[in-house]
Structure formats: C-alpha cells, structure tokens
Length: 331
Image 1 (cartoon, rainbow, N blue to C red):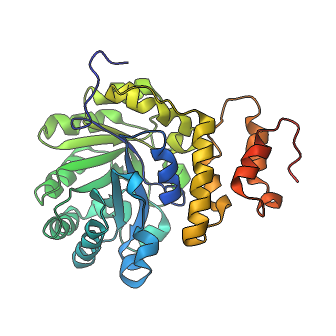
Image 2 (cartoon, rainbow, N blue to C red; image 1 turned 90 degrees about the horizontal axis):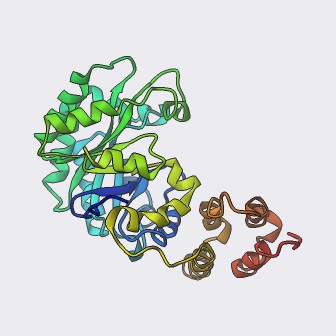
C-alpha cells in the first residue's frame, strides 16, 4: 500500500479496451470486483454505428459506470456523429483508437496508422469535442514501424492536444503495421516506459495514462508516481480476481468483502436476467469469468465444468453447483 491513498479524481486505474473480450458482460463482471476502475468498451467502428444496430453496440448496464466508449474511425463528421450517440447513451468518456495495428483496422484507415496523420487526428478530435460535453481522449502507441524517435510521439501529442484532447492513454510499444500479428504487436516491440514518462514531463498540464505489460500492484504504483493513470489489459482479463484488490490498494477504500463464490453467484443471477431480458445464452457470459479461480486448487476442473457444452441446457446456478462438487460428473 502507498502511504497516501490515491484519489480517483487524481489518478485513473482502468481496464483496457480488448476486442472480443470487454463486452458489456465482461464489464459487468469486472465491476463486481472494483467500484472505481474505469472500464472501456471494445472498439466500435463508426461504420458499425452509422449502418448497424446501435442498441446492440452501445447498450450497457448502469452498474458499469464509469465506462468509456472507444471509437474506431478517421472521418471527422462520422466520429462526431458517433461521439454524440455515445454521450446520448450515457458513456462517461469517448476514446479514439489510434493504437490498434491489425490489418482489418488498417484497411479502414484508422487505428495505429493514424499516428502518421496527426492533423487528421486533431481534426477528428475537434469534431468530437465540438459536439459533446464528456471528455474526448486518445489511445495511441509511442511509434509505428521503425519510427522510434521521441519527437514523433511528442509532435503527435502536441498537435492533437491543440484540438482539445487533454487525456492520452499511451501503449508504451511501437505498432508494427506490417509483419506482426496483433498478438505479436503486444509482445515483440519492446516496452519503453521512459518515453511516456517524458511526455508527462514535456506536457505537464495534460493527463497521461500508461498501458503495456502492467501486471502487478508494484508496477501500477511505479507509474502512478510519474503519471496520471495506468491501464491494465490482458492480466485483468486472465486474472480478474486481481481487480478485487484495486479499490483498497489504490483508492484507500475498505477491502473487498465479496468472495469469489459471491461473485460467481451474482454472475449466475446476471445470466438469468440477461436470458430473460435479451435472450442471451449463459455460456457467452460465463466465458469471461473462467480466470476467476486461477491459482486455486480445483480451478482447472471448475473451468472445465463451466466450459462443458453438454451443460448448456442446464440453468447457470445448477452449473455452478456442479462446478463446486469435487467428484461431480460434468454430464
């Protein structure tokens, strides 16, 4: 623990936007363990909102607050329209993705490749800032491909901040647009935390959160001494019980009183509710909590029960009971 607990108004701990993972079911699950962490949606493209099913993409639960909507796009008018939709649906922040390196995103001319066009990003930000009252933020990398100079990311931040963005979430790795998969882009380019720390030094009035390789309380504290926030990605998803420490560790709140079993039971209640209200299959929700018992005896068998396709016709509370019977048969 730090000597002086951090204040939520001063520091932000967040769970990263992760495609196919941080849907509203995952966010509901994470919120059961932390009251304060900022949660992000998966990236939602402007095309999906303009031409698709808006409620399907933007619906979320009141319990998820604070929650941010991450948008993917590169056309200022479209982004302004979608940012306004996000505000109308009640999101606490609108975030522009300038960090995703996937080929699909590049074909849409957005994501990390936008770092090559800081003025376009500035135009996008200004278009959104002009139509919403909630904060507009940008998530980006420290560089792309072989561009490793500090000046590249410094000039990007400088141009975008002049358009009205005051908060930047920086993944402290370069994004390789060719030759690496998205997974490799999260692992192979080296982490260079010092560049993010330097951004805060050079832009002291702006807010900077850091992302990339953060998987312990010690690392979070290390960055919060120099920056305004820390964003945790896959570690939060694979080891979600870590989130149960955050409110006490970083905000000085009382320790979490819910047990893992309490969380699991509440998720079962949620699965029943979702099935009744939206026809959602419980197994599409349960997949997000498979890391809940990581490190505990019997965790592997517990995961197997919750993942057993033969149990899909059983109600979730019954599946939970089976998962906690040491000698129970899955079928």
